[in-house]
Length: 380
Image 1 (cartoon, rainbow, N blue to C red):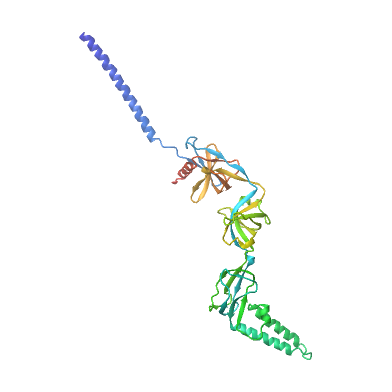
Image 2: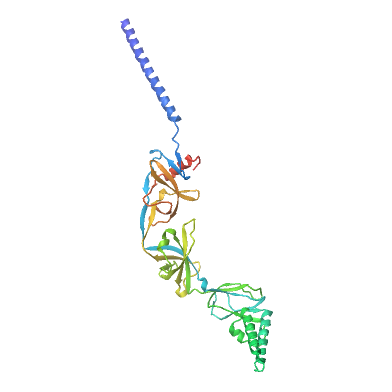
């Protein structure tokens, strides 16, 4: 009996030793695996340098979980271009009243925003130059009368030339033909008249103030026809031309459509926004359109096409927009793009940097951009 118990105890001890050895081996293997998992670094993205100076980002297939790609789509544009512009004076319908003499302002008859008629007296100027020129003119007329008898050969032509020169001097000083004809005696004061009918849009004339040649006293403008200066995208340039019909609408008069045409297209394109300006001549019945008023411009044109990508594909980095173009085989090219607004939410219009049919990273584009910075040894 005692021998049987000893035999059983021996078998139990042998089994227990085997179990301990097995657990020890498993623990060592688990420890090594854990250390290996900790010590194995994440794969660093690689950059492939191109001969032309470009860089291609190389990624493993599962390196960015959740990453998707989308195609650059070509969408049809409607047969109308809509843009926003600012109302401005037609500068051909703006005129100034300037002093052409050294003197002072004796009197004024209008103030800012007053409406004036062409030829209306606006401001009275005092200057000895007026008196001198008027005296010369009267003297020339007297000389011409004395030189009119036939016995004074050649005297009439000389006297007429003197009268013409004296009249021209008065005109250069700013006097109108009617005021010159009304001169009966020299006077140091002259009324300056409105060169056009319109509205006083700027008034710098103060009674008693000294003036010098070239000083602008009044600016007059008319609102019968106005300009609307608007921006269009570079992609739309081929769809517009001078003389094209358009309609303008404002928030102040939403039920009124102001008709006009494109009169000029700017020769310069803004490099930052890839837009250019168009100048529209618009009829303004009743003077409703005012300078600096915002207007929505609708230009009827032929249909066109635009490139669009998912909005999540666009990455904003260091003041510019980028996308990652999928070149296949886990290769991605970081490209700078110019974007514009698009009518469908969740999409952006690409004005430059991509072609139709190309594929770009959509979901997780920000993570791909961070890996691009990492591959360059930078922090995103």
